[in-house]
Image (cartoon, rainbow, N blue to C red; front, top):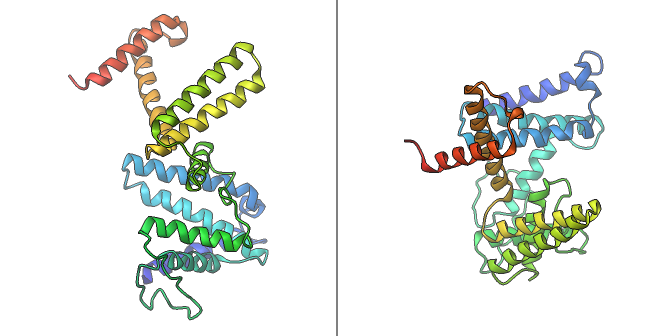
Amino acid sequence: MAEAEHQLARLLALMARLRDPEEGCPWDREQTFETIAPYAIEEAYEVMDAIQKQDWRAFPDELGDLLLQVVYQAQLAREQGLFDFATVARMVTEKMIRRHPHVTFGPDVLAQPEQQTAPAPAGAGVPAQWEQLKERERLAAGGGVQGALTGVPPALPALLRASKLASRAARVGFDWPDERGVLDKVREEVEEFAVEMADGDQARMQDELGDILFAVASLARRLKLDPEACLRQACDKFTRRFEAVEARLTAQGLSMAEQDVQRLDALWREVKQQEKAGPA
């Protein structure tokens, strides 16, 4: 624990130095909440990438980059008299205590006398209990006015946001009775898109294509699949197969740009078949 505290103190001091008006880094001094925010998203995805690759050597480095974004934003807030890193750490600790009434914490965690642990909702399992406590907090934050979709951040990646919106709606009964109904909805949206595509109306096509993607995200949720993970897997698969086609052509001294679509499709099918067959 002492080593962790020491290293965190070093990081906080480093960030303050980088932002020093006189002797800090010119680039860091120019940054704002808004300019730094996109980096947090980027770093979060790099953490995800390291996990998926099971690259445990890169993992702590990527987690450090993500932590730096929290420290950076907290330093900007401290400079403006809004809050500091200690406030961030305290608030998330208190929130986790509130949301885990089924866990007994020691004095090292419950060090602040004002901390009160909310009682567990009767008869609730841990996941349901977590959601009920979150709902209670959202209701309190909204002054008692709470819609089913309140609190889903618009800045989330679109597929993830769609999944969360559909999940929230399902909690209040706005859902299909089974997976078949969702699959039928996907088909319905595809048919509606085909009509707009035939008419060539770009705005309507965009609207209907969005409905397809939303329905697909809803289907993934019903099947307990992460739509973002599904799409990342598809991107990885496409990259792997595309590069295999590219390599075959390069080995023959050919350029992909010079091939017709029939030739490229045939090579794609060969690569796909070989991949499915597995190693010889």
